[in-house]
Amino acid sequence: MRPGVGAALVRCDECGGHEYGGAPDCRRCRLLVDGIVEEKWQHFFDQWRGESELDVARLIAAEPAQHDWRVVDAALDRITCDECGDRLSRGPLGCSACNLAHGFRYAAIESDRPGVPPGNEHAIRVNVSVVRRPQVTSRQELLARRLLLPTLLVGFLPTTAQAQRISAMIKSDPTPEGASVLIDHWFRAQQTSAGYRIADKTVR
Ligand SMILES: [Zn+2]
Ligand SMILES: [Zn+2]
Image (tube, rainbow, N blue to C red; front, side):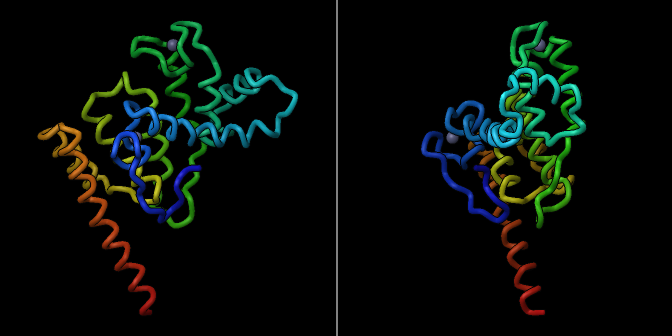
C-alpha cells in the first residue's frame, strides 16, 4: 500500500534510506515501487475475471489515455516486446518499440490526491517510470529522482526552481550520501513551512 498524504517517511531495513528511495538497487525498495503499480492493477483486473490477463493488458496498452497511469504501466509489464524481448517499454535505449511504448505511457490519467500541490501525481509517475527504467537515465538524474520519490509519495513537490537547484547541487556532489543530505534538508524545510501554513489556518 503506497504512503498517504502527510504520512511519515519510514526507513528501509534493507538499504537504510527512506522506503522506496533505494530502488532500483535495493531489492526491498524496488519491490515497493513495483507494488505502487501492481496494487492498482490487481484492483483493476478484478473486474475482468475470466479474461486472459495478456488480452486485457494489450487492450489497455492500446488506449492509455483512458486509464490511470499505474494500470497502463502494469499492462506494459505484462506484454513482451517483439523487438528486444524485455517487458514492453523497459528494454534498452536502442529499442524503438520500447521507446514508442514509453512515449505513449504519458497519455495516461494522473489524478492528484486531495491536499497535494498540483502535479504531484505526475511527478510520482515520472519518478516511478525512471526508477523502473533506469538504464535510459543518467546516474545523477536517477539519484535525484529516486531520492525525491519518498517525499512525493507523502504529498510534497519541489518547485521548478527548487528541483533545478537540487539537480545542480547533485551534479557538483554526485554521491548518494551528499544527495540524501541535500534532499532531507529540503524536505525538512518544506515540512516546517507546511506546519506553519496549517498553524495559520488554525489561528484563523
Ligand atoms: Zn531500500
Ligand atoms: Zn523493446
